[in-house]
Length: 336
Image (cartoon, rainbow, N blue to C red; front, side, top):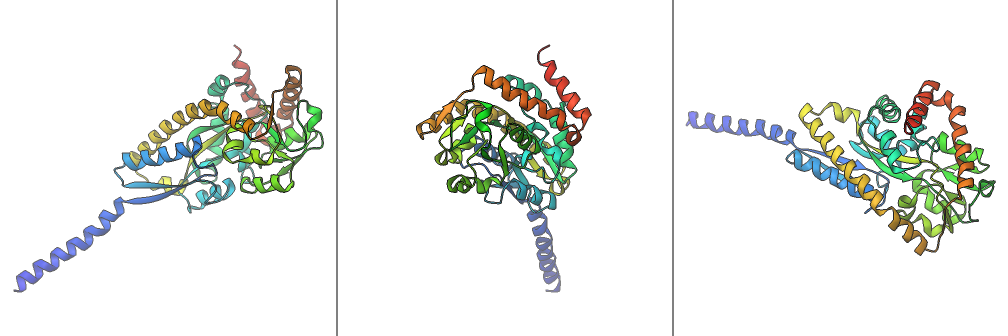
């Protein structure tokens, strides 16, 4: 009898010891972003989450929270750095309050086409990705992939913008980016920094007359419903980063890190293709919503480009003269 009791106790003890080990294999994580449900970025975030869940056999499962449910980019960045959030599809350009280097890719008119963007923005060894990875890494965030946002445009509810003079005095919302702010201030606008979740209401109430997101975000976030005019100024090409909190990243095995990185590579490649394929449809939707969409005449675009490129030299103190020089060399090399 005593022997049976001891055997049962040993069996129970073994089960109790095994239970935490089994549970330890399963890990739940959250992924937040500010982008609209059903947008190419949101679709990509779900594809990434599903990939990680599938490829880890469910040992790491991700739940996606879109539409700023976990806060704006600034809040997401802080939570990643503090260990309160595991993953985010971030817009680094909105985190310049944390580090001014995080919007170096917002320098005006770095590229003028998707082909140029592929060579400059999606070059892992280039100035832009290298700078963003290093800057994010110094603040507890680990970038594992870069996805496309879009070429930014100007929308407003006051007047059509067909020249630089039309921007003069206009009150425009800009993200927390010294590059974009400097560009619009040099063009004569009043640049107002507001978190993205507050933008729609600000446009509705007339707190600001306009904003500078491109067709995808303007359409998917319904910003066009509070605007009358849109100009395809293409002043900034923007990309985002699939980001992991460094604390969480350090806890993962090398095998799991490789799985996460592979899923990020696949998700970003598909997102870029999908985003570009839908660009024309977004513009059509904005037009159907009653917004006048304008393209700049070549001579007027040249004036915008001149204002934008002048910003580069003025911001050498912010980004570093060496980085600006290296970026100029990359851009000049596109024509070789």
